[in-house]
Image 1 (cartoon, protein in one colour):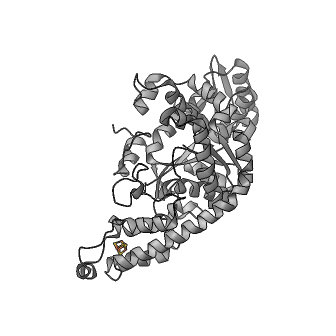
Image 2 (cartoon, protein in one colour):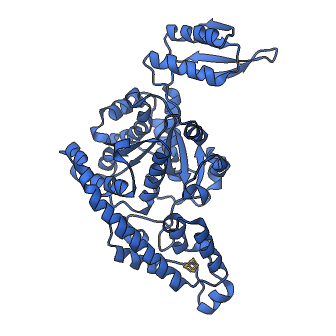
Image 3 (spheres, helix red, strand yellow):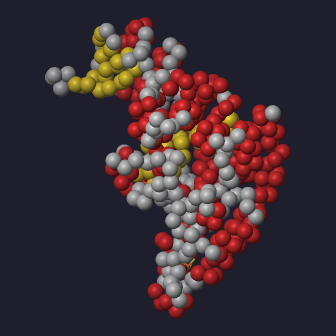
Length: 438
Ligand code: SF4
């Protein structure tokens, strides 16, 4: 089985194998049910999901839901980070409460970055950019892992339910891996689950927008959410073929299980049988049973976590082709670099153009292999029709790379100038975070 390493450098070439091997569902099936989908959704950049239908239902029925992401403050925020921020902001516009975690514990443990530097990078790069891109801080919970007792306490609790073998199988930890590095993996699970703590309003769907390389965290955390539940609920079948719901009290106190029997009998007008450790309910009303058991679990100081949902997006390639990497500055565009430098990088980017102008006009270009087209697709062209026209003109040989690059370079300069101006304005809002770090 292919291993996806969240700290490694794997470029995932074949996204479809993720559907088969890891059970990620195709996103396009949900698209007709989403009002005003984001361009990443419309254009197949978000290609897969886990449990996103629960988020779609919450959006549709105006029920509470949250969106969460964490950023490791280890370098400049770039267009790859912008993708996640765009997704958070879109979900905020759809009614989500937002959780933006700064993974300073991870940066300190895994990259050895001093705390003060972690905090400076977090504020100057990530938080300021988030505000400049449109995140409403008054409707967001922005926090540092190292300063959040509820995240750290939850990480400790979750740590009781996972062992070294499980973590090693997912992340490839060895005897050389530091304890803090392992702890940072569990802390990320706590980041993902803590929007469901009672202090934030209790269990609810939470969407985590990630690149496919982050799926191990998602799988680990979904597993932990289930392990933390007091009850397991399943449909069983009698010998006669009649089906019923069985609720098992994994860690539930006896009174809690008795309450499940009493409440389901009363509220669903059905027959129940209470056994040592489980209760059988003559119903198939799964939704109602889940709701009742969740309420009982919370009343008995349980967490009643809903496994987090995730969307998976494609990675942007590096400007030179290949992988985008922070250690190769010419492969990416950071949100704080001088706009003229970014324009220069765009003009030197790899295109899908032909060797000569004559060939290009005769055979057309290859936008699928062009970094300029990818920039337009991901970030620089909001209008689908305009993008389609560029694609067509390129394919038909009516657009040539020199002109196309010049226009893209102009667009990136314009975007960065505007973004950096908004970053300056956002600095007024940053008082609170600077106080947190004092
Ligand atoms: Fe890329 Fe534009 Fe050249 Fe087509 S014309 S290959 S989209 S740079």
